[in-house]
Image (cartoon, rainbow, N blue to C red; front, side, top):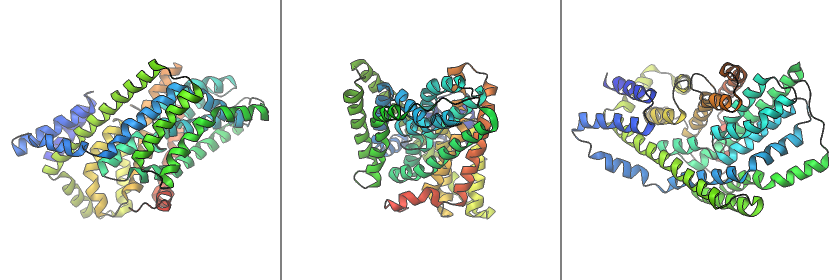
Length: 428
């Protein structure tokens, strides 16, 4: 009864609009006070969880993304994708997905991807005859790739909570992320060939293709530089974040020359704001995790699941279904922090690979970004287009089905997620 009341109380706090870190800290503190008679252990718990060098990746990756966004790389990315593939039937949709994929690997943010690419792509798609619903849906869904394609903020958070390798998770997200992007692109082409698109722009010529490649080269090269270094064993995830930040500064200051002192100050401010928010959430999650261990909630859940004799596949299907429902009401960060500490002992007992689970969790969190009533990307797209929310939702529904199919494929064939990190020498 006590674990049930704790979870219900936490969900009510989150749904009330209270900040995530405050809700976690308050729920954990109440449990500690009731069962230990004091909250003295909070300080040691928070210090132990924040005193980890790997947390340096958070501000570094955030700074890298902020610099590249403010340097103005978005227009060049979409121009490149549109120039290369835009003349094909449905090519503008494919170009939008391609732009989202590359920008996701730069920003690591689903919302930033949808906002930045959507502002450029949606007017172009509507100009060439794309039904508004289709244009809204492809940008909303393409933006979700920011959760799965590294460097991803939710991935880093899950790795910290689950004590998993960030480098392995980053590599594990690459193949599923690319496969989802390919599926989205193919769907756009099928839509177009079924008569959903009136016309396509003419092929601009090889000279314009070459010029677009030259202009976007430095932006496109960033993901291979960062992830290639991890894959080749040249540097760790933390070192990759530092290299990425230096690379972003070089591109912004030397190549684009569009980052003055004021924009640099804004980058530093946003980095500080986002990083302190995430670290506060990690601290709250640490207290909540300590509290649920005090009342033996993870071990009770583990014993309950073992008694049900679900097996590994049954356990994963049940968990994914629960996370999908939670995603309709809670933010992705809250889902990670609530479910991971509770489910981790059960995962280990059933020999569930935490990297495989992490990739499946990220895809499920992608679904949460485009499923009502609180799908963030739905509201972002509505905000930048003034379209009806119902149109954005209806445009996104086919991509929800595609992501569910992708998630089931990875459930059935785990090597889709685990092959690349294993090839890079990670063992888990």
